[in-house]
Every structure is written in C-alpha cells, then in structure tokens.
Length: 283
Image 1: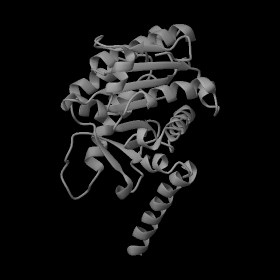
Image 2: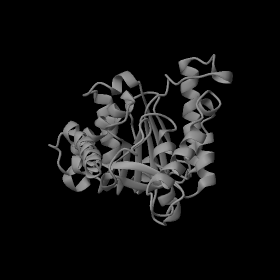
Image 3: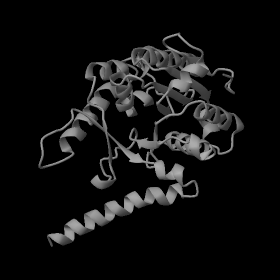
C-alpha cells in the first residue's frame, strides 16, 4: 500500500497480515482529522467490533497533528517532535483498541483545507476503495473546527467518486468540537458509547501529550457521554451509560448531487421549527 506523503504511517497492530489485507477486513472505519479524534468520536464503533465476531475496526488520521497546543513536558517540543509523539500515541491507541489497521496520512492541515489536492484525494480513494466498510464515522458538517469540516468534505468527495456498489452502507457525522445535543431528537443518531468504560478511559489517556499537555479530553469526553445519556429523555430512565450523537450523512453519499450546505441547514431549520412550535404551544 503506497500513500502519498513520505511521513505517512501504516500500522497493523496484530502484525498478522499485510496492510492491504488488514484494510480489506475493516467493517467499521473512522476517518478523522487528528490523533485522538477517533477515540473521542467513534468509541461506539470500536465497541461494536470488540463485541461482535467478524467485525473489524479501522482508523485513519488525515493530518499530521503539528499544530496541537502544548504545555508542561511538551511545551518546548518542535512541531516535528510533536508529530512523532502523536504518531506513536495513535499507534498505542490502535493496539489497545485492537484495531485491524491504523493509517496516519500526515498531510498538513493547510493542504487538506484546499479542495482538489491530488495526494489527499489519492490516499482517500485508496482507503475507501480498499475496504467494504458497513459504517464510516466522519466529523459532522456543523463542527466548529475548520480542519474537521475540511476532512469530512474530502471524505465525502472520495466516497461519492466510488462506484455505487462500493459506497459504504452508512455514513455518520460525529460530534467532537460542537456537541450535537441541539439536533432535534428525530434527527439524532444515538451511538452507544457507554460500553467498555475502562477501555474508553485508557484510550483517551494514551494521548498524554494532550491530556497532561493542557487538554483534559479524558474527563471532558467521558463526562459528555454520560451527560448525553442522562439528558437524552426527561421522562425515562437511562437506557445506556454513555452516548455520542451523530448525524446521518448517508444521503450525501447515495445522492452525490445533494448539497452538503443545504443538507446541514435542514437540521438547523428543524431545530428552529421545534423551538417555535413549543413556545407557541404554551403561549
């Protein structure tokens, strides 16, 4: 498997097959912008593959992680040194979570943000074409992180270019840098992120450069999942121990002509209608 960037990293944690064979086994694929995004947004997919024989999880990190904030022991690291640290952390998470394969494409964020880069396009075409994923986890189009949205768009472009029979059955846009609790309940996709809680914490703590480097993603992510589970419904007891919310992006793949912008604005319009209707109902 040949990726375009010279610093791209391919890792098969079990060491029992070539990358091409490991990728071909993947049934649940997460393509994220940065190291640790996978573990924040796709724990439900990791759990699905741990709990079900014949399922295999694959992770892809598109950018190199050079611009991450850093304090403490990491405060004086150069971007090059930080990239190496984050690369090794992502490998450790893949081993701990028993991923079938972990790919790190090492593209600068500035490159990914520009549509049409041939290297990014070629890498994503190779990955999506090399597996028959049942579920793909992406960032969502209402995320407030520019790189997250750009990575999501590059992935949609790659999947839309696939033959119809090779496109994933389901594509989900998950929350990271903007919660999706605001989405009306009928539009929400509930991802059960409450399973394997000890593993969930360990997967987040693997990224020590972030956790002790000034961003407590371990506490914040677990707290958000638990809060979603409790605040999901007001008149029922909690059904799961943790929830990650997602948008169903599958229509954007099955109908490649559908506007991403208009599709996303539909979620906002339905929220507006819901708020207006409830206020008017009791006025």
